Amino acid sequence: MIRLFCQQYDKSQALMCLKKYKDEVSFDNKCRLLVMRRMIEQTSDYRFNPLLAIGCRMDIDKFCNHIVDHQPRDQELQGKVIKCLKVKFREGKLRSECEVQMANVLREAALDYKLNPLLRSLCQEEINRLCQDKDDGKGGTEECLKVALLQGHITSRACKLEVAGLIEEARADIHVDPILHKTCSLDLRKFCFDIEQGAGRHIQCLLNALSEHKYLQSDCQKMLQQRVEMFKNADEEIKNQPENVGELLAQVSHSPSRRYFMLVTLSFVGMVFIMGMFLGRMTRRTILMKNK
Image (tube, helix red, strand yellow):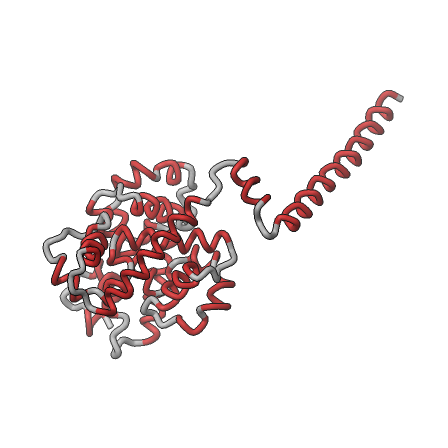
């Protein structure tokens, strides 16, 4: 596959090239599986992705140094630095060089959810229940989860927040939303050809065209209107995320599962109380034995 597709690339760029061509019909399936495995490894530790490590070196030092400094050098970072960079990507605080590299990482993950270990972990039940037939390697699973969140079909709070985060990332850069990007590619070239990528500029350009009643392709217009609803819904989900113990308790008290939480809490308190009594008696007996 390297000889077939990547002769013009330097050997150090072989993986980058293979990632680019892995979906070609003539691409060897065993090689494709190996490339996918390497891509998953890159999402677990930014140091496996040289382009990201170089492009985001200053941003990692600025925003994510507390993670790197406290992690043993011989252990993988388990996606913690990537997660930190995602937050800054949504907030538009990354330098342009790092923003482009993160957009590439997020776009790859959007096309294939298996490249997003956190999403796969937090939303596995929802993926199995709602999106089992959407795993097409072209963004079907992520799109299914976004629609499920909008329609209120996701029950897990952790999964809701993760999917809301994906929607916020797409708002920051349309390239991170490959289905919307593909659907609106003609309108992007028509109305936004002179607009720089990133910081939500392309999305805003299309939304401006929509609000000004400019002629958009019908599929693009329909999907944009759906995305507007998704953005509002994601905002609500993220706003409802508890930031302290008081907010967490308030959220639990209004939850439909509050009886379950109460039962678990009381059981835990009861166990602590019983253990305390048991250990207290043992301590008293030990003291008495010593006094004797």
